[in-house]
Each structure stands twice: as C-alpha cells, then as structure tokens.
Image (cartoon, rainbow, N blue to C red; front, side):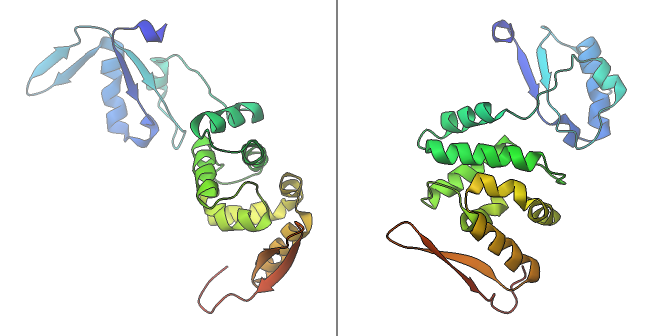
Length: 212
C-alpha cells in the first residue's frame, strides 16, 4: 500500500528530461545511492517508493524500464471522464459534462497528431463555464477549439470526420455549414437565437489579414 510507505518520490514526465538524467537515475533506482565525483557516494538512509510517469514523447531506455514495474494507464472511459469533470468542477452541468466527455472519446478515436487528454477536458470545461455555456453547439465548438486541439493540422482531421462529431453536438445543419465555410475560407458561422429556442445561421466574411 503506497499510502503506508514512509517515503514516496514522484518523477513526473521523465521522458521530457534528457538522456543524461535518465542515466543518472539508473544508479539511484538500482542501488539507492548517488555518486558525486567531488563528494563520493551518498547512500539513502531509507529506500523510497519511486513513482515515475511518462507521456511517451520519447521512448525510455531498456535499462530504466528494467528497474521499474510497468503500469499502463489508458484514457478514461466515458463514465470515468464525466465523473472526473464533475469531481473537479462541481458546478458543471450534467449535460455539458456528458457532451465534453462524449466528444473527447470521439476525438481520441481519430488519427490526430496530438489527442486531447483529461487536462484538455478540464481546461475546456472551465472555458465553457467562463463563457456561460450550458451545452455544446457548432459555434461554441469552433470558438473554443483551441482548448482541445493543439496542432493546426488536427482541425482538418476533425473536419474530415465531422460525421462522427455531429451526433454529439446535435446540431447537424450548423456544423455542416461551419465546416463548409471554414473549408473554402468564406467565413464563419454566427448563431442568432430566437425566443422560441430556434436559431438563424448567418455567415460573415473574415476581415483582411485573419487567416482561417
């Protein structure tokens, strides 16, 4: 039980460190000691339980992995992600939490260069709340897409798979117009809501100098 360990250390995202640091860890993890040329060898008084995380931005060496027990943590399921969103952002509506989690599941199934993680889900949820949104639609998705997709080319991937996005939004007409306008560079979609809950879809030209 890690909770009962006297000492615990976390080496977070070790894959972002250089290979020299990784080599330094080999002695620490194997012998619980550090050799410093000017000072000699320093030994640990207690053997800590070390937790190492990696996001696979580069492959770790076989030598380092050989000194570890391996645990793969996949992306959360739909229900798990909804629970995470509600736990971290209690004021988030059930509908919006479900839409965010559902859309994230869909995006992660696409061949994106950088699939969005849970951190992006939380950032997106906070951004939508700051914008006083209680649900996702095509216009809101486009306005806040920078919270989710961090590679420009991934926008094209999403548009190519828009048939999988539409059911989540429940706003097929608006989304298809949005995709068409962005694809040919004509402009963007601006929804105007009526008192009866309907919406009028209007397009507008982008000002000069703004790239789509």
